[in-house]
Image 1 (cartoon, rainbow, N blue to C red):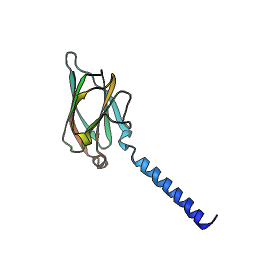
Image 2 (cartoon, rainbow, N blue to C red):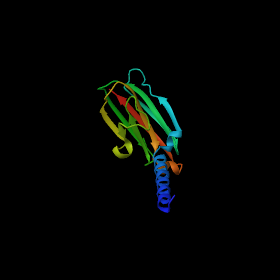
Image 3 (cartoon, rainbow, N blue to C red):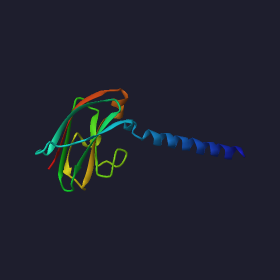
Image 4 (cartoon, rainbow, N blue to C red):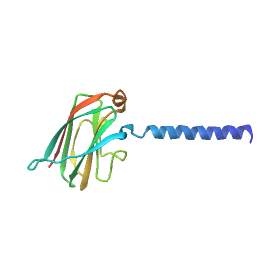
Length: 145
C-alpha cells in the first residue's frame, strides 16, 4: 500500500468513528431512567392534575387514550427552568418524531388531536440540568374535551 492510500484509509476510518460518535451523542441518554404511567381521569371529569418530582435523567411518560378531533390542553408548572414536556402521537414514542416539543414551543400545548389512540406526554429535564443532577418539582395538567 502506498502512503497516499494508507492516509486515505486512515481518514475514512477516522471519519466513520467521528460520525458514529456524533450519532451516539444524539440518542437521548435520559431514556435509561424513564417510567411509564397511565393517566386516568376521575369519572365525570375531563382532566387530571399530576404533581411529581424528577431528578437528573429521570423522565416520566404519561400515556392516555384520546380520539381524533378532540381538543387537548397540557400545561406544565415547574420550579426548574430546564423542565419541559414533549407530546407523541399514537404509534410514536420518545426517540420518534414529536408532535409537540416543549423546549422550543413552551410549557403549554393546546390543539386538536390528529388521530385515535394512545398519546404520550413525556416530562423531562434538559440535558444540561440532568447532567448536574438537578431536581424539578412540577404540576402537569392534562385536559381532553
